[in-house]
Length: 200
Image (cartoon, rainbow, N blue to C red; front, side, top):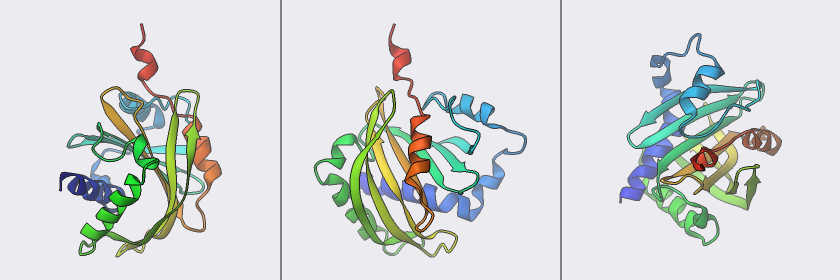
């Protein structure tokens, strides 16, 4: 049940907070990418991110660190979540069928929630690669119910065990007709982790 609760929390964070207007209470005016790159440094290195991407928010929720980023022109969304190790998704989940089971449980337990997913399905699996690490991911498509701002979406979800004491979960999505793998790969290749800094 703890896993299901965490998945519900994650879903609500990603699909609900922005729609419900909670982010307007965060100081956002006159805060550029440089400031938010500094805030995100404990999670990932965003120093090489292109000016085409805007870092919207960097904040901590319970034991989770959430970074929200969007492509300015295409409005494609990217989320990086640093979470307690093995709490949400881990690399092994993308190889042994556990990912599908977790999402089936999530959909089953959120059927009566105001915000939930319908007709969710995974399309394919692959790996995102950077100079620092490889992240397995799965492409998905689904409908976000009761939130017309989103509607039918397409994207990917991936996970990395690259950090010493926590996992990274990576999500990218857009309108089903507008989602671009090219943008996702461009964004992902600009990421770095703090793992290299642990070496002496």
